Length: 385
Ligand code: GLU
Image (tube, rainbow, N blue to C red; front, top):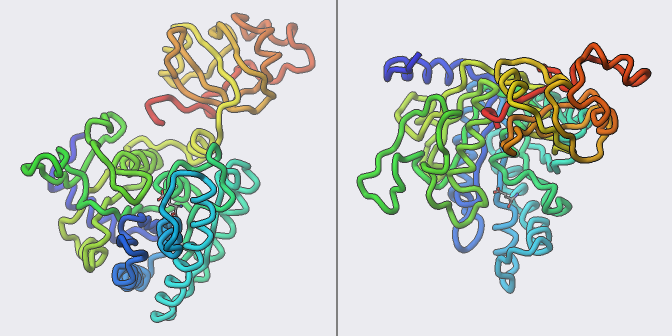
């Protein structure tokens, strides 16, 4: 059903009122000036977040700014794209940033906790669950966790991408019910406002999954790594697990207060009606595919209808992997259909290409476990990532 303006206003007020656990992400472009950390903005932000916290809501803050802050401390250092530069500057900047949050929130008798994560921490299911327990304990104590990527040790290939994507993973980890993304822009515009003065702010986006994000996002801000594309991608992921996103101008005074008063600020991205499970979300976005299976047209259609992947539809297998690996599922034209967890190793799949499920028991003997190679419960279609 299409969302009307009236429905949207009601949805907005209900979501703001009922949200219990809010993830607030703030980007480097909001937190810094050309001379370093913007103390005025940070102080205002702390006031504003404290107001939200005082309404009884739990808050997780995902804050960028370590690299930008660290770089400006070292006057001899110009921000360079090399990894070691970023790693060293983030080590300098992170402690300064954290110091400001600690002291600032203490003015309101609030306690903060630093949580630095690498992608590896969330990839391993056990470590994921441990991290989750830590967050839940901190929130139970009414502490405000301040999260950033552990840039000092994260290597390029294993990075989250950027803090927008890290925040989307945190939404799933802590089961948040509202995502606020504070950026240097006023919200999402129908055209690039720097090029077209007549560009208009979009108040809400529904059905983000079917939107062409590239066409909405020419250009990105200079300080952060993400730009608007990345904000919308994170919002799309949030929408998949039923969490609404608000993209807000983070430098604007009392912006969170205005939001919670129901004013028309920023852009809302509405959640999908059909949510995916948090476990599917975890497997699709936290893991990397270790191999590929190429499937025929019939199997591709069956998967779109929510069916499992059976050996009879598999034409080829690529890569060497064990049971439980995440696989990309491709059509014969090389188009990605989805990703899913394999019940079998690459060696076993190679033996069963094109076979009927009823033949598997004889073919595999001891290694036979399930008739499906990828069960529908462990599979996520492309439309979702
Ligand atoms: N972790 C980086 C920092 O603190 C920011 C990454 C991002 O903004 O996406 O500087």
